[in-house]
Amino acid sequence: MKLGLINSAWVQAGQGTAYGIRKTKEIGFDTIDIFADPLDLDPTEKELIAGECQAAGLPIVSVACVAVGLIDFNPSVQRFHRQRCEAYLDLVRDWNAKNLLLVLGEYIWERQVIPPQEQWQTAVAQLRHLGQYAADRGIEIALEMEPFQLSLLNRVEAMVQFLDAVNHPAVAANIDISHMVLAHDPPESLRKLAGRAIHVHLSDCDGKVHGDLPPGRGVIDFAPYLREIHALGIAGSISIELEYSPEPSKIVEWVTEAYAATDALMQAEGLRS
Image (cartoon, rainbow, N blue to C red; front, side, top):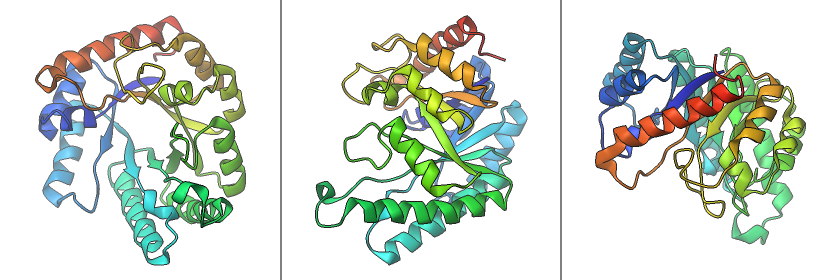
């Protein structure tokens, strides 16, 4: 697998687009994932990202999208977010990326008032539509598992059930090791995603709350998870997710530390290609 970085690490530290892309390559990453909203992205910035990645020899693998409104109970809100996701998928195609990393929403009102199954079925219908939209463009959707109590996809088991319900070849799973630990999903639960996972996120945490730390700054034992990922034979990237560095002025050191630690973990399991 390749080793990538989600560019939000640089953006949240106040660094410019071009600087972040060039530093990502300089540090040694193979690929990059982009967090950018096509509805906010002007043509100049869109071309800048594509041009800088091409100049650096840094392929864009994934574009991240948070679309909690896809499962809103208001049809007008659903339509807006479906159209927004379609714009994201067009952006993935335009950048010659592989997948849209899609974060679905949560059950509202503590699963009261609106039956949870109704929100679930709304999400299934939305992903069937978006899956076909992606397939028509030769790309895929990787669904994120969020470890929060009311998240629609908050466990590996929920992910499997959802993929079964959607039943579309262009809709698959993203694996996030930190999220699995926080959800108390053991490494062997990944076997349920054989042939159904296309992308991986890696970061550390304290085992209690969402962290997105460089490996070694938290408590995660990565080796068992990486062994299971290796066994899945995913032909994609492991992308480091670093959010909200406590010292933005030292973001280069923060990213470099995460790169070195993750590279060592991947090399130890024979995962870095």
